[in-house]
Image (tube, rainbow, N blue to C red; front, top):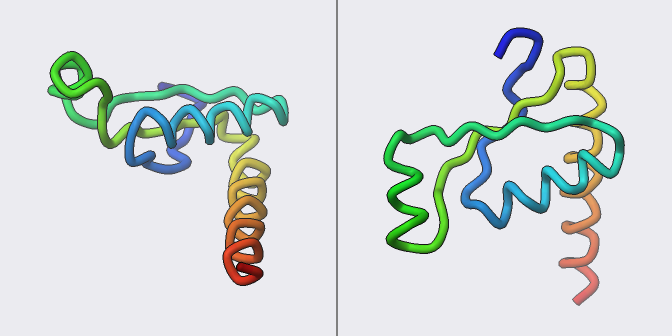
Length: 82
């Protein structure tokens, strides 16, 4: 994937969907790549794939990382208020 760079590895389809949706809402395109060739089979058998690599355009990497950091910070703040 020339011009694209690794951002993170999502644990499963749900996490990949949440992160992809957040980035795409911020006008950052995302590509997914299943890190394991058996991920498709796992999706058929178990309903979802695991370990999905997310990639963004190289020039948008720092912005994408900042968005993820702000999401993590927000989650930490909400967890502390409970």
